[in-house]
Length: 455
Image 1 (tube, rainbow, N blue to C red):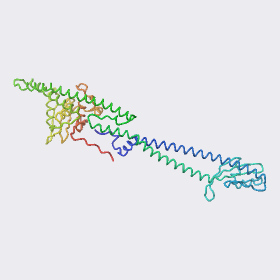
Image 2: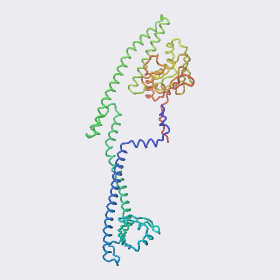
Image 3: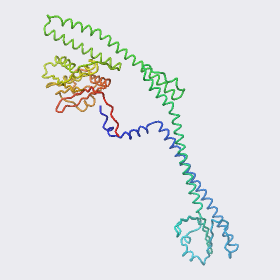
Image 4: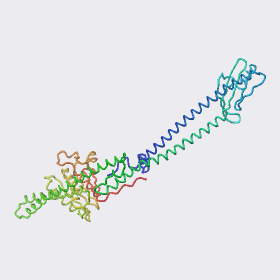
């Protein structure tokens, strides 16, 4: 069976990345990293915001107090420029007669009103500057107090670098903690998966719960034990039922076979009665083959043998010729130079080919059914009504009956059995519309090779 078209051509690397993102371990690690990164970033932002606000409030309060003190000292001795107690602060007083001179020299100062203003720019030599300017204007004097923010900005830059480093450091620590936590959290889950995988090697699964503490993983192990116990019971009952049914059915079939052979040995039988007994004999053989094939499927074990496929096809043709009911239909076998021999029981090959040949004969009203034997394949081609897209998609589903099966008998499980036999023996089966009309069913006895991932 071909994989869906959406999966073809998809790079294996992309599929691997998607599988990794779906792993619970990677989700835990990613959650720790995102939590650490988010909390640290939020803390850094709030810290930076609080620092800026506190620093701005302190500086403005300092400048307000200093400009008031500067004005007070000026009025004590207007003839002398008073000193400023801080090196970062530069003070200046402009008298009424120099207001116009200030307009020409520093028009930005001239336009400012009372209060504290933030000023920034670039010097003539290209050096950026930033300072706060406190302004107090009276009718006769204007007081200016400038606070150099260069040191403050350098401190803010260093603080931001420290904050960024803290974010990176905490994120790395979150990654390490997440990695360690994921390993601790997933360790019992991985141990449970390993024990569950190894328990499938035996027919009686080992109890998992005693190996784990009474926590979530222990509860999961207990639930798996209960499920495995119930599943083992169901499988055991199914196997016993199949074995009992096969054994009980073989007895009446053996009686029928013996009786038919005894009747066929009588020379006084007329041709009509002999033909009916031969039909009963073929039906008995079909039942025996079907029981043997179903028993192999129920046990999930491969049988061995050297089955001549050409001889099986001839037997199937002989069995179906009596059921043509006068249809103008020709059954033809095209065999190769070498006989096709398959390592499988004749019953399994008969059931697999019998369904394909039987369907071809059932749905073909006229024309021919041709069976071609290849090196390791069998092709069954008919000239029937063909195959719809819906039938092609659902043909091997159990219980599905095709579009042209309205007036035919059957439960729609024949091709489902063929599919199960192919899965058991590693064969491949395909049913497609014919080139002109009809259907072509191909059964390949080559083991199915696993598809290589795209590079």
